[in-house]
Image (tube, rainbow, N blue to C red):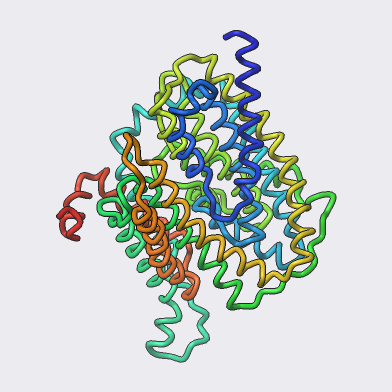
Length: 465
């Protein structure tokens, strides 16, 4: 590859990281949705942004997003599907005035995950194609095993303080029942969105955003509003309470979970981090936050890097699927360039993470937290209406005019999906179950499709008529 072309590609990756900065701190705005709009606009951007440069732009964007979306997850309680676990220890740190430290620990874990991806560069072209050949025929039952473990990990854990009789039974079993109900209802919603979404056809590719916002973001914000949460002053520390050995353990556990999530379809960084946490017997909040930082970066960035591994041709995650319609990576040089782009973008994003967190803390010191939560809730509602409406506008091609009624249908459809998902997402909040069970939205439909009976279940539900 020409050195000038390589430098130009790295500059596009850094540009992507800078583009992702304001997008990553906006609550509930997923980088995949923005990337989808860019792919739709490639016809107009083609002369200025050819596919190979778009790939590097996406690398910078996904790397920055994986690191910087820690800020809204901890400070605004609006996590995405890969961050639902870190919010609990992160919220504990926040209520202790140590939100900055929680963000810094997550960033250190993220840098550790990127370092592991770099160290795996020489073996990745040999390891992952062999793993794919071995596991390709077994993905469906592995996915069912993950679902079974999620249910089993909600084992009854009552307080033994309830009166004898059915009340004591319910005290012990309510979290398990709530987890199962959340898993099944979110899976039912996933089937509806997959087979018969209410969004107009040109906006249907955006139907997951309202669902994820309703399942994971809105319940937390409502909880903040109803509980009248008041944050203590946040202390900006100059160091973190973590030894090199603890950091190494956290990065190791997070990398295990992130690699599992990146390689297996539908499994997110949060689920992978949970599995790795059980496997490595994590009991420390610092260790947990570090591991989740590494897990989500390896999940997002490592999953996208699999698309660049020569001879693998594996698409994992929305970014890779969108790019695969325009471009493919075939040479080792492109893969090494992609790893270099991730390194540069990751280091830049870490320092931006600390800088932006300081700015957020200053703003939060001047704004009543309940008012901030209300503003976040209003913004979430606007997002779930605006993104499908924009998708409907951009999705119409071939000279078909966009009618206002179609845009309104897309906006109201997004709001309706979010409202239903919010009802499901409130179940674990109110009954003490893991919010991870809401990932049944993707896990159940795709596991059934991979097992060969998804269409049959959809038929039973009347979704194929």
